[in-house]
Length: 234
Length: 234
DNA sequence: AATTCTTAGATTGTCGACAGTTTAATGACG
DNA sequence: CGTCATTAAACTGTCGACAATCTAAGAATT
Image (cartoon, each protein chain N blue to C red):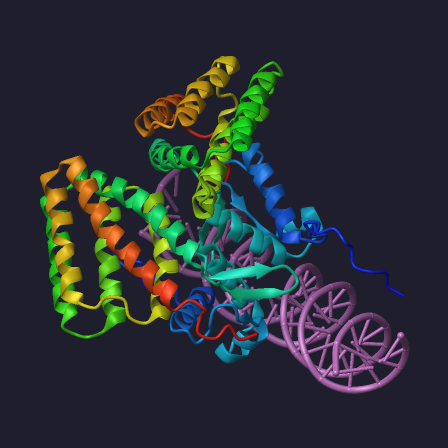
């Protein structure tokens, strides 16, 4: 005797989504540097470690490959991606191009609700700045930029942002720290939001350029300083 | 007794890349409309039809999912993507944003060689226009735009272009025809190249906007005219 | 000692099978 | 007749196995 289907339309969490879980675990391991760039990802090893078979691991690896965290060599296996300085330039070049556009669109679609969401996120950034938790800080930073893309309302643009962010998360995670003064970072988001609220395309682009350009230079500098990745084992 | 390894560094074609082959076959079937939008892609069926097991089919499907041709419903299978009018808008919005930038970068990197490649591709477009082969025409059109992205020199941007193009190819393939006068299309590429050769960012953006905007309106119109896809079987 | 050949171990690509879920068809009931 | 349970078929998610290939260690050769 089965009772009625659930009345509230809940997102229906994929109870047994092995592929997703494996993908998350792998991502975590990569970002935390436990799987250093250049190292081989042995399917059977991961599978044994997680108590699953190789099939879900393979599919998860393909996912991470598409996200740019892994590189596949046919008949040779998956390897953790190695980033060079010019990868950073590519990512930020594209990101800048897209986020400029996203911000302009977001301004066009801005409602009181979405405006408040952005403001609240800046508050969160300030709160997080006190926690001395770099990973969390980076995460909340992305959340702000992601919000802009969401408000822009182009799903493909949002996906692109997520892909670029996943690569950046890896790089930044490996660098370890990013910002010297987390509060300063929180502050630099404010003029971006102000420009969006004002709705002047030129001003928006100028502020986005300044903000992202800053991060670009910063990350680029750090990558060039600590270049040969931690331990390209194997 | 094995002779020496081949002296010339050839690309080493992946003899037995089942996943890739399956992916190509599937793509073909989708673009040609044999797998209509909304229809279910049964793994076992495809596998049997191609004489392989389900594993490669699954991985190929995941690939096409990332490319936006399929949609995965957990525990329910893969379905051929259904495009609505707003999908077209999303794709072209993003494409415009990216190609503007690509064209400006291409102008910056332009060499006599790459310039000639672009010119030659326009010639090819004119030649193809006489063939009355819409699919080929669309293909050569993409080749021109892709060249610009290649010359721009950002690999991630190129990949984004390819993904967007693969979605557009599907839509346009299903629409059947695209251009009334293929020669006119060939001609409209010329001012774009001219602007890139001249190297004025504003002029480049203006011409790219005009060219892509034209295609946007055209495709948008056709999609709205022939809206409910051919046969959303199943 | 350095380089090439040989061989054993490790790893990927692919396959067929099985359990659990979804879907469609059938029949019961209002 | 239409709605709701019941059952059978179809399909996905996952697994373990096997052959083909790659990798690395050791032997042979110069």
